[in-house]
Length: 247
Length: 146
Image (cartoon, each protein chain N blue to C red):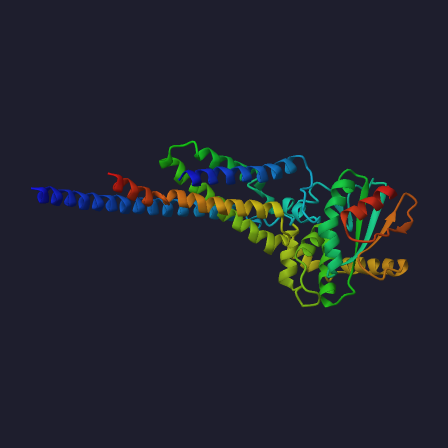
């Protein structure tokens, strides 16, 4: 009798264990299906969002919005009524020029240019090598479209290894597109007289001022005279201190 | 499971703090504090990638963390898959943004990295909750008790 009860109990335990294992397996299957569905849904949503928002879908978008709403005119950025102009000499291949453009310029633009206190001028030099010449010509053509600052900003953000031959037509076209310019027109105009004249003027002014390194900076006040702006390093703090004193 | 719920809440709150700070900085037009100086955070925050369909990414992040926090108030059957969906989407988008920082913007924003780490951890915890990690053991104990 006792043995029979024990057999029944053992059978019940086996059945319960089997049922529990089945419940676990079913729950695990359900969870895995849920995870698969959730993962696919999440990745689909993100992929769609990325696809729709990629800058490549908006060829007119500039690489940054730093200059949005600020007038560009030839080599100048900012209000023509600004009392002081910061004149810069830069080579697009120069790494320190890129440091200035990416780490210091945003602060200068927000603090001085946007409120109309300062105007910027960029004189493009091409002394570092062939890539400088190729890039400089396109930059000068961009200035004809009043897009030099957008072009140089896009260039500096994607600057390659010096004289590695990276300033190809494809690279320059892509840079012009990132800057929101008409890339075909810019590339077509790069060998024109206007572009060559702009680069020639920049070099002549650099020679006259004795510019022997880039980036070099000068301030032009109401009297039209250019005074060197001496800065010890390329940080926003150094520039704001020097500009606060000068303005 | 209680430990995973607590971990989800703690991580989501940390995410709210990070994304909330970046949202505040965005609308107050301030420069984000970057450990070690530099303008990397500002460059990332002012880049064209800082917005998605016109909405600042920081705001999307804040909304995501708050939504994950809110899933804890839902019944488990709905709350767990919802949290996993949000956290996985957040982690995938964070991975994309990290790629963009390295490959396109050439600057790393420490706040974005912090958010990416938090969101990845949230994804791991949320998946563990969805898969009922720990329940097998409870089930075995339950069966044994009977």
